[in-house]
Amino acid sequence: MLIAFAYIFPNMMPAVCFGTYIGLGNYLDLSRAVTCIMFFGLMSGPMIWVPMAISDFIQLKVSMKRVQKFLQVENV
Image (cartoon, rainbow, N blue to C red; front, side, top):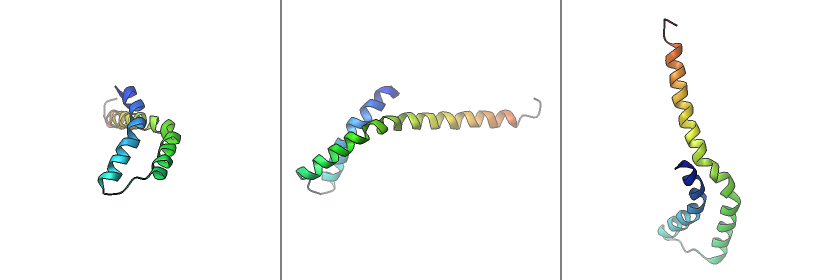
């Protein structure tokens, strides 16, 4: 599921951004759209790692709580 989201996330980002931009009442002309599409094309590789980094951060927090709980036990 996470891997599928990681590859869908960069492809959905332009549609979400364009929809938000138009929804806020702005006009999307061709030059701005092409520039944004090129930018999102460049950023698609790094954006694949965003969901994975979030997942790793959550796992880090859980692991740190477990280690902290283990170190606070008196009878080791």
